Image (cartoon, rainbow, N blue to C red):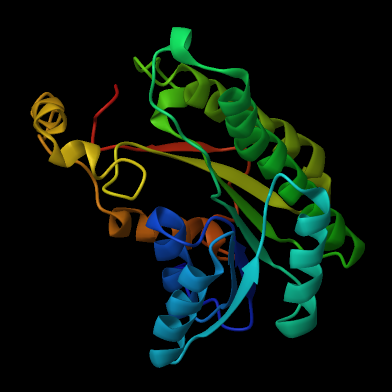
Length: 253
């Protein structure tokens, strides 16, 4: 039996959709037929993405969202339900990142990364799942972790810690919510050309780093399209929950 990536009639919510992977995810889900709530803090960038999606015949709703604020989370999901319908697919993509050695971290920066990557992802998943359970919807939740959660990367201690926590969260919630038919899986991308890391890999140091990678390249956001659609579709990942999928071009083995 073949599976379809057609998401017509589905509603997806993507956090951190202002740039990078989140922006790509919003566009891909809309192209597959989903009505997409694109969320983040930079609303002008969301509106630009909305225009691009609608120009291709898709449907998108830009919503201001701060995932570290529980009221903001509830308000964003309320607005999605009012304008588009109940959320069937959540892509937990919003993240905070800082590349520096552990000795240099201050408390405020540490708290921001932890609040965004752990607290935000957890309470987004909790709020969406509670509503899925109430209406008996076998929805899908996709968490964006990182290969830095799987192996220590110098200068990424705090980020890697939070992404490792996100993997454990994925497994724990998959176990708890399996009885309701909710599937929750995690993607661990390697180095991707995005707002977060792209500038670094265009520096001399970054180019030298790239040359140490097995295929001497970093990924592009579109390299994750197929994986995203498989996990978002109702039947493509029907036998998957609690899975942690590495997509890194053998950057970390």
